Image (cartoon, rainbow, N blue to C red; front, side):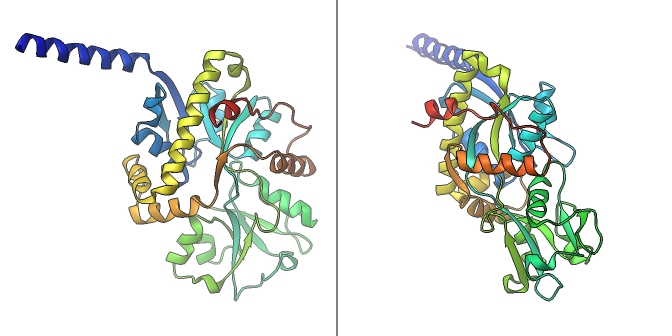
Length: 321
């Protein structure tokens, strides 16, 4: 009997080892550090959704000195999370990125200004200093200013652009009249710093019709020519969107998964997941918003030519039936 149990245990361990060896490796590079912004991926890993799809997923956290577009171009990732504007700009420069899924259906980008300050409406921007993130995050802002006809080189007829840190210090220290925030992160940092919602003038990119597509999943175009890679991405997207659904439905557990991955301040992460949930769609790219994004970049000359083949529905058509 003992020999039989040992044999069964050995067999089970061998099977588990074989399954682990058979799992397809996927390296995902995030756009920023571990936080609720990426909860769906951490949940998919934590809940075993990737494993169920036969995937061994490594999630690489980003940071201020990490450009996902450069990471994947250098072979350091199979798939990245980035904003459409940054993806199209990289494609225009020769990195053939393709959007394979779009978990974020809405933009979380906002510009906030103190209500007792000089900026109350878009007409007040002229002659003032506005804080903007760079590293690919500046494109929606420049497209918006171009739409308003405002030069961004400073002067009385335009706006002065402050290269903003990834926090709300420029507002607190009065280095800028308005700063960029995300609905799920820096906006709440401003609230935690002592600003009340009624103390702020908020310009929401989505409500103003200036929203460009944000966190999407991108791969290198040539890799999709390999049927095995395409199949791997179908399974990856299916598991990722399952993770996003779970995160939306279970924000507390999602925040715990983020903390396990290196996130800071569980209460902040839980709040962030709750705000991110308002932006998550079904994972399918909206061609109307894609066209608006591409046009905004063309108008601003951020990209030099009409992008072709910059997205595919082949993955989501199979993964999200």
